[in-house]
Image 1 (tube, rainbow, N blue to C red):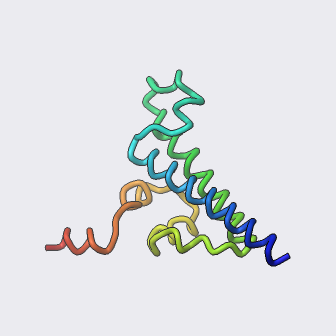
Image 2 (cartoon, rainbow, N blue to C red):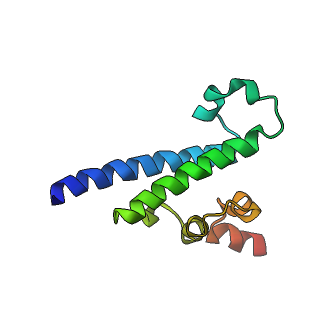
Image 3 (cartoon, helix red, strand yellow):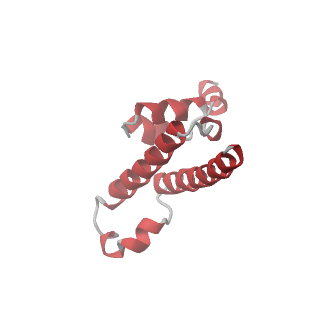
Length: 110
């Protein structure tokens, strides 16, 4: 059982890493799989909002599964990002400050 759990944990952590990259690419308006699935939506103003919502939902789903399975998912995120994921709501704060680190806060205050 222990060995099986280790394999499952590694699988979920790799999926979590992929979901994080997808969400971050969506935030940066970079290409994701969503662009390929819905190419006709590229011209719609709401497209990037939908793309971010889908990526956020995927990230929440995988972090939720990791939590239920006791897979240590929080190490892949900053404490601030963990807080956003635990709140579950993709607010403007998440969109604006996802990439912010303590270093950027220090530079901003100088």
